[in-house]
Amino acid sequence: MREIELKYGCNPNQKPSRIYMEDGSELPVTVLNGKPGYINFLDAFNGWQLVKELKAATNLPAATSFKHVSPAGAAVGLPLSDTLAKIYWVDDLGELSPLACAYARARGADRMSSFGDFIALSDVCDVDTAKLIKREVSDGVIAPGYTDEALEILKAKKKGNYNIIQIDESYVPAALEKKQVYGITFEQGRNELDVNGDLLSNIVTKNKEIPDWALIDMKISLIILKYTQSNSVCYVKNGQAIGIGAGQQSRIHCTRLAGQKADNWFLRQSPQVLGLQFIDSLGRADRDNAIDVYMGDEYEDVLREGEWQKRFKVKPEVFTREDKKAWLEKNQDVTLGSDAFFPFSDNIERAKKSGVKYIAQPGGSVRDDLVIECADSYDMVMAFTGIRLFHH
Image (cartoon, rainbow, N blue to C red; front, side):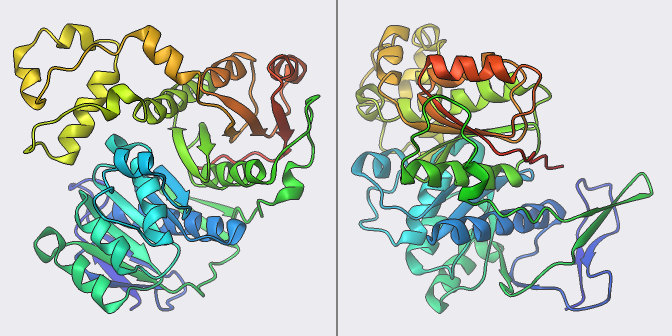
């Protein structure tokens, strides 16, 4: 197929809309089900690039959960602990395939942001992954293929209207990419940066010890940042993003936003949250919302509202700031990647609060010495890549 007509562009008033190959060749994608829209395809193509690179860098299946052209989560297919399976709402599914584990991690890191996501998978979608996707609120999925049974499961989603895209994994895009803004054509070389160990060899802190698993997390953070709207930072732990800050005008606001998401991810593993007893009829999305409010500082006020308590079988105790702080101090050995340099050491101070030990950033600020000094004060390991990863 050389062209796919779309219902409309970013908004319903933006017509006509289509995707096509400028040279007239065949598109490298096939729509197997549904009718993907303009933003769906933007998420699909950015997500596919991300998971393809994650798999190449780690030799593990990868998945990402995209929303509005930035990842809400991304991960490789490492096994789930019992605690992670519980907070990701997959503990009832038994042992999952590596690809399903990757998507459970990608979806579960920030479930509120992932609500209504577009999914990208590095490998052929299997039954385990399809069953997991079927039960989540999602707009669609892109993958290099689908088993027959997985395809039938997905086709039944959203009353038969779920968007399923198959991409030719051998497709190689042109070296130059173009887009138009206000009728003016922009052209640039594609960002073909190979994120590898050599990129992380310039360690500028006194502590220069990077375990192999931390090096993998650093590479994962940088690959995720390649496809995240700038400014952006990404917190990673054990092969998955646990907090992504995208599209902020200030670097510190990115670091705070992503840090809060990372904190929430870890707070969900606390005894207080794991012990919440929801009413049986409460769905997963409503449980996620309830947990988010419960972990927030305003919960003590919310407790006074009788309507709120109808979500629980047993009235929860207040999760105090002191208790949350004590629990968060247990989160250690987190990796932080940044798409551009940290202009001030306040970013390092905020990262420390979320357990960051390893940092990958381009360097190049006039205050690099102060940033390094701050990292040294916490015995962090920081690598300067020398490469900026802006994405717009």
